[in-house]
Image (tube, rainbow, N blue to C red; front, side, top):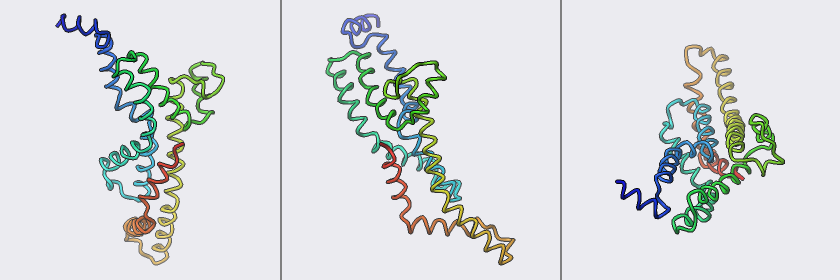
Length: 218
C-alpha cells in the first residue's frame, strides 16, 4: 500500500491529499446539484404547480425530480461544456493541477450564478460576511452562492404565484357556484380538480411551463 501511495505521489497526480480532495468533492456533488445549478428554481416551481392543481401526490416526487434534473441538464449544458473545456480536459491531459482545474472550473459556474442573481442579494450577503466588494462581478464564490439560492427561491415563488393564480380563481368560482346551488355536502375540490386538469391539458400546460422555466434563465 505504501508503495502504491509512493508511486502515485511521485507522479504528482494521485497523492493522498489530492485523492482526499477528490473524494470530498464527489461527496459534494448532490449538494452542488441543488445549490449552484438551475435545479432549485425548477423543482420549486414544479412543486408549487402540483400544489396549485390540488393534487398532493400526482405527479409523484420521483417524476418531479426526474423532470427537474432533465430540464436542469438542458439549462446547464453550456456551462458544463465550458467547465469541461476549461478545467476537465486540461486536467485529464495533465496540463493542469487539481487546484488549477478547480479554479478554472469554478469560473464558468460562478458566471452563470452571477447572471441569475440580483445585485441587492449579493450586497446583502457581502454585508453579512463583512466583505467589501466593488460590484457583483467581483464577488467571491462564497458570497455569490447563497445570494444565488435566495434569488432562485424568490424567482421560483414569483413564477409559482403566476401559475397558481388562475387555479385559485377556478377554486373560488367553483366554491361560489356550489354554495349558490346549496351543494354543501360536496367538496368543492372534487369538482374543481377535473376543471383545473382540463384547463391545464387544453392549454398544453406542461410544455408551456417547461419552456418558460428554461427561458427564464439568462
